[in-house]
Figure 1: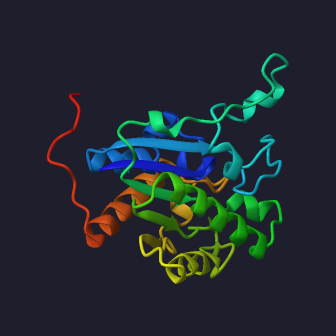
Figure 2 (figure 1 turned 90 degrees about the vertical axis):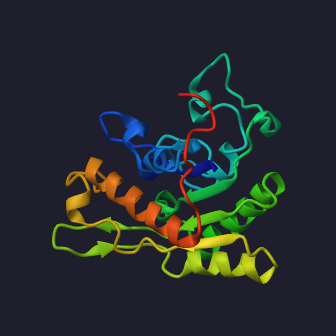
Length: 223
């Protein structure tokens, strides 16, 4: 299993963790399966190609480029170049996407978000024609009173159902409702803390095993 992860940064790359991505759920999941893993994430970025929390472009654009959004502020390099996916060896065997919180925070409508997500999946399919794609629903924003604020209710199901309708049966919904509660986040910013990321990784690992994936017995490359 080689896995490629793309998602908004605060949910995928371990923002606010002392060891960053090394403590984040995508990294932990990859380690558990002895998978060569790549995390593609940008704190504050939306999927929609809009300015969001210091990012001039969205993940739907940035994922396919070489430079991150910091390029915009460099006077000697204020442009991007296409990423050469042919040089990704080995190619990913599984794709995991967790994204949408920053789109919701920027008041992107549900219909516009779904349209952007579908276009993004179509572009990914051009690169990865047969790989399973796992679409996470939001785990939301937990509150101290025990409630959880969710966004884009029913829209991720809509996205996956549309892929199935056009014949792409290798897109799977991962329902993360209830995975993250108040004790799993930093109280001052509601982003997953270290135990929270460990919990997400553990639950996703169980989900993958039930789906049919098994950890490798050893690493494909020496460590």
